[in-house]
Image 1 (cartoon, rainbow, N blue to C red):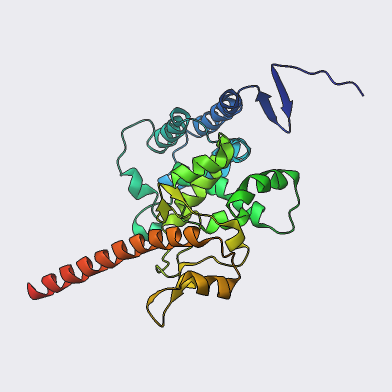
Image 2: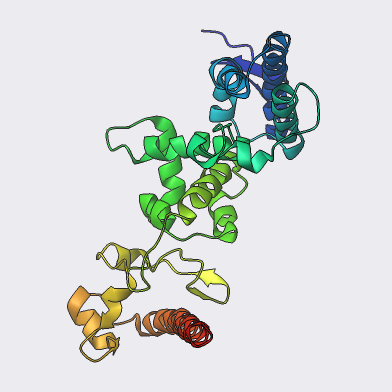
Length: 291
């Protein structure tokens, strides 16, 4: 079977690939962006309410962008801003905004029309890959490819961790698509996490560092050591001794330095949180005295 190899570009599954990732994104998104604008323009002459325009946007226009935004890295900021401009030009018939954009994206109950927030829309699309990745029945080759990358950081554990932009770039290592997925997941889940300090995950945690680097001890994780409270003895209100850790979890006796480096970093964050709580309690007491 003969193949004609090319150094320019190739198209498969509706996506044209070039030898430059950024060019690939632009080559695929710009025609779809034009289709998106044309769709909105075709409805421009109709007298629609804000809710009607929002329905057109969600039902007919945005679907034209979903596929390329799902399978490729996010487009550059100027393209994202172009999408936003097209939306609000359509909403206000090319005139200045009459209602704050932050208000329009709110729910109807909160005085908005649930207008699509493009930044949140992009995050949601990229986060959909996490759901696919965490599906245990999924044995796709793309998943196997990313498992090799994430294995060093605990594989699916990374989606439970409090990761920083630094570790996102370290993990992705110039893989822009993976970087977008991890950043989106971190943004979306950041405000949902209300863990106490004891239930804080030890590994890949941006708040638990040594020399600006997070921790991940693969052999410890494989022994089910995951949370701060697993290292803490509540009877004496202090961390377990290294000997006790070895006895409880069967860790190597050669990891003395690793253990004390870790708990020193944990102590720093716990002390900072304790100080914040004391300051908050003090402020609340002052407020009560003046009311």
